[in-house]
Image (cartoon, rainbow, N blue to C red; front, side, top):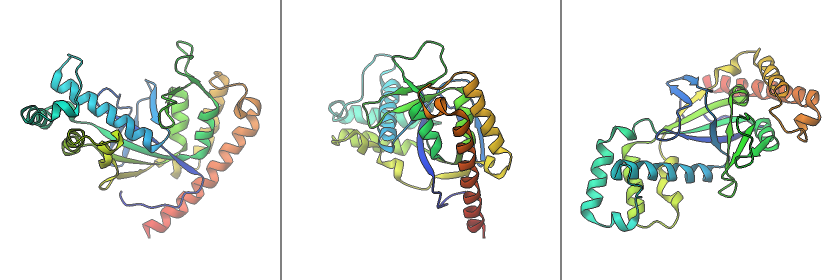
Length: 265
């Protein structure tokens, strides 16, 4: 599906880049979404952080392709050399390492963002082996979160839809040109993220009336395993919060199904 515009009050958005050094936790092919929850999965809280992270990872990837393991980076000064610039362009076009690069947006029940914002530990302070939510990059455009298996299952249940853009070789060439021209902001070099049509996939979980019970079980598992902060609302009022989240989701699901029915007509 594409070009779907739904009025989904009560949702928010998280963002993810994957490919290169970022593990492909989400395998989205057509309308099918498979999730690998075996590793911590990182999300950007804001679109600006997502753009910052994509620019950082793509620049690292191109540097690794061109310089191999020498630790050098792509800079505007290096790209100002016409011979070097043509060499970089050629390697980007021909390298198989630039396949599988994706920008993914997740429209999700806002309660999930409230939960993770109250139940994280900073990455430098997190106990080794702990599967509690991890907060990263907090000083850069709002930062992001790393989510382990139990929280990732809840994340998937509360997601309404996915939106994916494949980052192409032409996008990478655009980024290189932006760096060569000395764009003031790193974010400008990945302005292509907002271009073109994205592949939009509705989470099939919203079609099941049993998903609210799955959400209840996932919250109870998080509570049973102590993967929360005791001073959070979930920690202080677990029964109240579990009921609120499942009730809110049921209303959001009903609204989403109503909106989808209008679209399908």
